[in-house]
Image 1 (cartoon, rainbow, N blue to C red):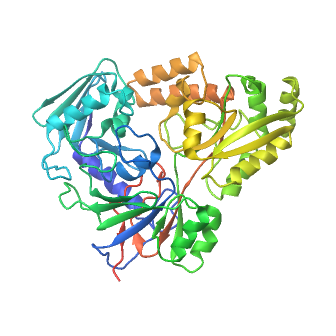
Image 2 (image 1 turned 90 degrees about the horizontal axis):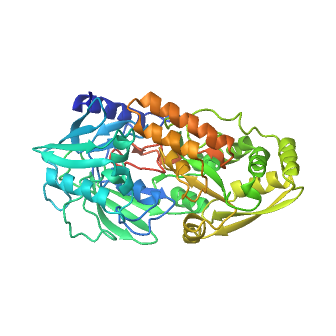
Image 3 (image 1 turned 180 degrees about the horizontal axis):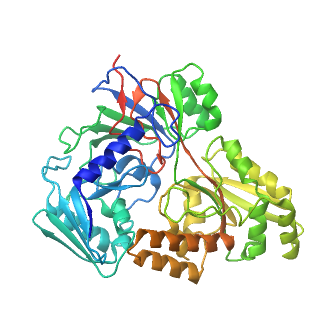
Length: 503
């Protein structure tokens, strides 16, 4: 039986805290150090790129909500560290039976929602049941294998119909968020969670402000409030920082590091992430239905040049980044070779080819410019269609009306999209789907990862897409601010440890 105790969790959280407060230059995550005393009444301004359309964590998709609300406002029985380790949260500890069919969580006592009401085991049972049974709630399918959810005193027991190697991970995400039973809160504009912060205001088109919740069950947030300011354009964000309007910049353009560090008021931190720059290829019809054309596109692109131009990150040639289980270096599958690319295009009957790249307009032009140049060198004329994100969601994501598309996918553990033929990637391979199913059913973590790695190699060998780079978390931090997370911050930004010096 696997048991994750409070003591073990504390050790993991302590390790994470050390990683998050390390001095500048730590490639695995950290923030600038400061010897000045922290101001408990401080307000810290954090620049983010993409604003959510509303605050409904149940039914509104997009990483923009997870980034600000999960961990800060909403919590589950378990959570994850930036390094992707699973640790107890609202549960003080948990056990998993040897057969992988029974998960028992011991609920902490003394936890309250932001409205002051006590968290009960009934709230937990109700929340997880709603997540499982409400089709309109995001990630409801992640709990579909849970047969029963019951409470016995402070213990909450989940019984599965068959093993699911991803269940604990799923419970660290939206599927595991615990809400107040039959709450009357307007989720579109408000929130009522159990985290260290409350949502105190949302100025649409500008910012979301989180205020410290004084009734929090754990260590209180280090700052009185955190203001998430939405500044999509890189130069505008740089100007705001230099003007003293922003203390932390996430999604920072690494090529601007010299400018922001010039006077010593900011330090640029680079951490690992699960961000994947994905060049999706619609293989349902036309030239891209030919694997030779897709492979040619992959071998025409200089991935090293993209990483160099971005100033951070690393190359990636398959669907699983290095932080996730199942990662394998797949650079041998599609090495940069323009001559081989031209031969593949010729074999497919295309000496010249025209394609359209649909890309959300908030991305810098760097990637698109490199793609246009590299593909032109092998006889492919690429037309760039820069669209509003809402248009991209409708045309590309929902209706699969595109040829090529670029999006930075920030989600961790998201290989499932390659096993879903209905996803906008349009990839459909029965062997990959079977391997993914086997991975889910595995009760051994190593075996599950090996099955994912096998499936990922097939996806890459099929040239289902191109993975242009594995992005880094690039964060610029003011010299008087500490405790800023720098690992995987585009997916989640836990602000509880951020502190600002007094004076």
